[in-house]
Amino acid sequence: MKLIGKTAWITGASSGIGQATARLLAAEGADLVISARREERLQQLAQELRALGRQVCIAPADVANRQAMQQVGELIAAQGGVDILINNAGTMPISPIINGRVDEWEQMIDTNIKGVLYAINAVYPGMAERKQGHIVNISSIAARQTYPSAGVYAGTKHAVRAISETLRKEAIRYGVRVTDVQPGAVATELPDSIVHDKIRAAVKENMYAAEMPNLQAEDIANGILYAVTQPAHVDVSELLIRPMMQE
Ligand SMILES: NC(=O)c1ccc[n+]([C@@H]2O[C@H](COP(=O)([O-])OP(=O)(O)OC[C@H]3O[C@@H](n4cnc5c(N)ncnc54)[C@H](OP(=O)(O)O)[C@@H]3O)[C@@H](O)[C@H]2O)c1
Image (cartoon, rainbow, N blue to C red; front, side):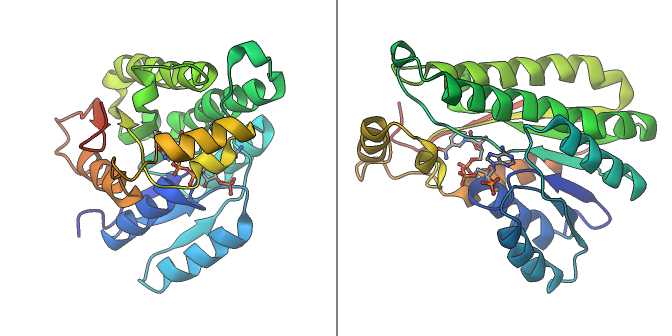
């Protein structure tokens, strides 16, 4: 087991990539702080992981709520801090920009950009003080490419990638490593967050099509485990992981 004695905070741990990563890191010996809005799912996951002998702290929070995220940061600091942050919570209610669905733009910007920054801010000071830590931001292949309807989502993920790279450079001298993980299509609940009916149907039909076998959440969790278990002199700065058939 590679993570005995380490504690990781995972946002968006109630489903998909976050949940799979919680399971894998716990299997490798890590204790966990798990966050999301659906508290019952966190309770179930905590029960499962505690049965492995791990310590699991549930910290339900909306990542877009600055005050709530500050409170999670204070809770974590009071418990001695975390070694690893998996900054994973995200949402994808995509639609054409020309449709002007401003509420959905704001939801993506608040969750995918501000939420990522609030989580960094909640743990970075403690990591810098202890001169060790690892922040893993989950951006997307959409941090490198975009297509009609994905403009605002891709904008948020380009922002996460830029934030990751900037933080990496700033945090080097404080012993804090930063990794930006860029998944391609992964079979999770993410397309259910698309509110625009036609776009949701099109995404489910095309992007998650039978001829392009998707990644599973566990495939991304394996990449994350690789990044967080390298020797101290190694920084895995970016990981782009896509389905074999995704261009
Ligand atoms: N699936 C893909 O193809 C894909 C590709 C590239 C990147 N990604 C990225 O991977 C990350 C995880 O997504 P996923 O694919 O695993 O999708 P998912 O199954 O829908 O998981 C999203 C997670 O984020 C949490 N979340 C969403 N909004 C939140 C908020 N405001 N506050 C707190 N938690 C929130 C959800 O929990 P609650 O609803 O319980 O709060 C859930 O646990 C996201 O950042 C996504 O953009 C996914």
